[in-house]
Amino acid sequence: MAVPSSGAVAFSTVNSVFGYGIAMSSYVGRTYYYYYDGSVYSASGTFPGSNFPMSLFYGKSNHDEWNCACACDCACNCGK
Image 1 (cartoon, helix red, strand yellow):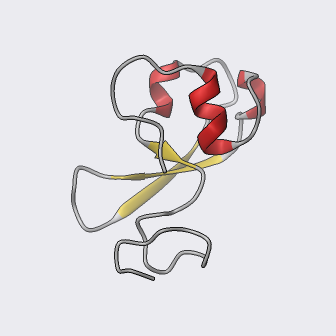
Image 2: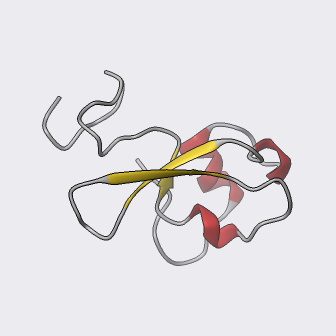
């Protein structure tokens, strides 16, 4: 599950996806994953070390749920 890709994003939603709490500082330096533009690959990034907009959470997840090489606890598109 990922944070919705549009609309209002509340920290309660972000926390339900990432599980790091409701403080922005809890996300600094953490890796996020996202599915890029409906293509066949996923990408990742790191939350910056200073204030960043809530919109940076759009479409992001704390695990690589779109990559079939991901850990067994994620829902991969290939049915793994």
